[in-house]
Image (cartoon, rainbow, N blue to C red; front, side):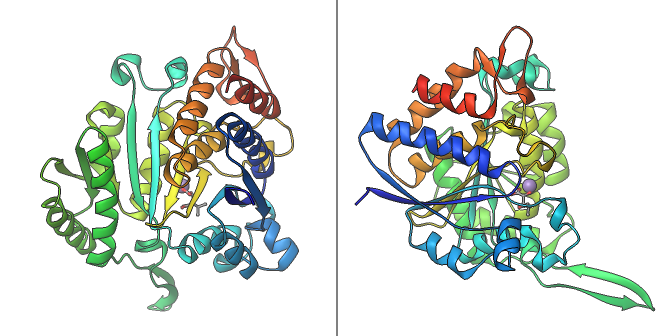
Length: 356
Ligand code: IPM
Ligand code: MN
């Protein structure tokens, strides 16, 4: 029997191409560090709609629950864009997050030295290097609140609900404080407490949890200000903790500071060992099948999996170092720079394996 059982949810668009490269790198890490992994595949998103009629088949949930960890490519595409909201591929993604209780989404924004020129932000603003960890609440708030349509004075209208319980805020705050303790002991909680009642409860609760972490310097920021501060002075941030929707928006913004959305990994954690690891970018249907996708965000997600779920920090460090090394000379087209060698998705996977 293998040491770890991993479920692959390759998904749609470029999902299969990038997951295949990540698997290759994980296999290489197994050889180098002396452990074994066994894979199973399951359907999620558009491919599940086509094969099984629903974006999240029960079998997929069962397989994920029976594994040590899950690697996800990406879901969605124009083919399924006209389906009603609860039948879209994205509903499968939200469903698996809910079903596995993955309430904590870690989205590191790290800039690789050699990629600094790919960032639209000036060098002097980024400084030496950038390392921000966004902790996004992932199973609550407006994404999971009640919603509906109605008529107001005979005019069609629609509504969604943002709601958080103190329990939901406490557990995500603890994840963020724990991470801050392992990093620079600085936590920024982002909300809209000048307007939203749910944000006022969020802020009160984070302050209460902070009493358990006297060493961490906590500050609060409104989300609009945070969006501005991220491009004005990103170096002021260490760990950011925020709600589901604010985290969705701010993590895309933070990814651009790091050069390309094609580089950023994420971990979705449940409090137990089981985690789901995926790039933060989407399925990129426009380039699917062309073999030019950047697999590095998925490969870096495997590094996060080794660190947070499988307790193999050395293998995680080695993969990250291998990626940094390859980037000095080789690039996929999304991060290509003159003078370097342009490579395909598959070649990039091979190069990272070799550098390991
Ligand atoms: C993400 C994505 C998803 C989200 C979509 C595809 C539902 O944008 O993981 O950030 O909004 O959570
Ligand atoms: Mn998003």
